View 1 (tube, one colour):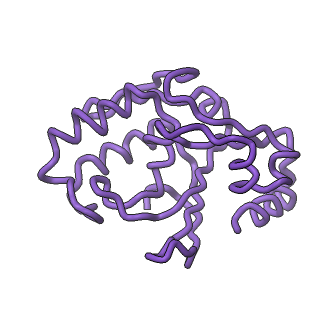
View 2 (cartoon, one colour; view 1 turned 135 degrees about the vertical axis):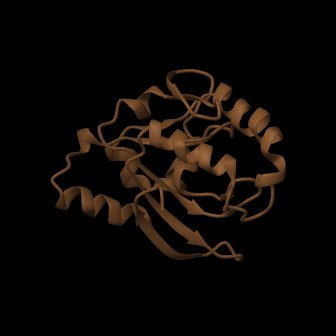
Length: 178
């Protein structure tokens, strides 16, 4: 599990609890309740740190626009952080090639207007060059998503590789652009 390692890393780096918060990157999915947070993050995280659900309709701010026109509108709690680290997983995706990396920001902590444009208008425009499981080479939607994440300044990621049996088989930490 990633969380115990992360908490140990905070301590070794001299990061105090008041400097840390967790924001659940939901996109448009339903918010997690206390029980789901405890299952996902563990008791210790909920006792020590503020934990928030992202709301794609409120508390967001526009900070730019991608070259392909996606408005970069991101959660204000995310924007208030000095260092932004996304925790997620690598999964096959039908129009962005793979999940993980910058998908933690778009759609994870983005406003509904950003998602509507990127996953709607832009997807329809680029359908022939982006649709297909694992299609990541020459994919304009993926390039737009990466630019969005760079504008939103995602500093790093911790991603777990999940196999076809939903088992974690490897872990990667580093730049989201790789």
